[in-house]
Image (cartoon, rainbow, N blue to C red; front, side, top):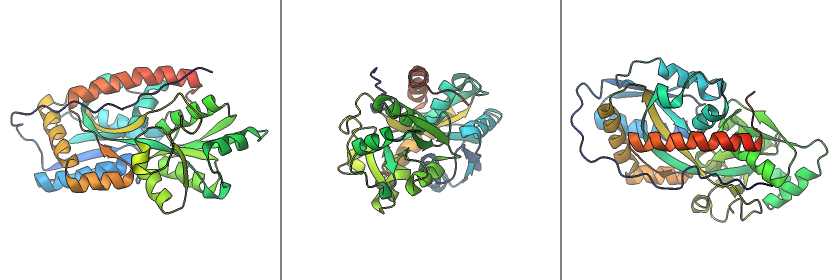
Length: 322
């Protein structure tokens, strides 16, 4: 079995540029930030934390709007149609990159139709199951799955989501016969894993940690060594007996292509300031995420590398657009 090493975001981003010249007419009285995923998902939660502080600092209205559909494509495409004037932005997670990398029908080119603003945060992803199964380890799940003649079901936030990539890679490496069930978003997939309708799902910290702490779901493994910082005692996939795959989920912001660099740099600088606030760091940590701010150039370079790597990985584990 081939070894798959997924390094999604394990290096801290370089520092932001220090001095920026004033940007005429920015910020405007109102900014709209589109989240192309369901309310309550990791992207939505993190963006709303940052947006609240943006509104307070700049004394403007910051609207966070969920435009959901087609695995994040509908909301993302909508932002490509908006003027590049600093009034519209797109908040995404690594699922945005996965979908663009493996689905050739996506109606936009990430590197041409968007301009990067910056990364906000990163989070290990966690493999979650219903406590009712009584699994004591990932190996218990694997043994159970291999005894099912028809295979098992796993859920994710849709074809081409980061959770889909994580789940397919683990099934591939563990030799599990598994079928993917696509949901509207991460909360829906996690809910069905929690109730046992699907055997497992992967979710970032903001979706997994609060439910695990309340005893509503069980975490069997994490995709990153950083996971144990947020949920003590949780093993990495390698420690759990499925070596060859690791990586963090990431969360970042884009603007429509052509948005002036000065606007994007100012937005990125303010997001970095907010993410460094003690109360924000504390809120993210409680969700199983940590600040990882970067500027436009670093963010765009990371996304280009991520797209190339994910396209190759998706082909290897057999993810096909549906």
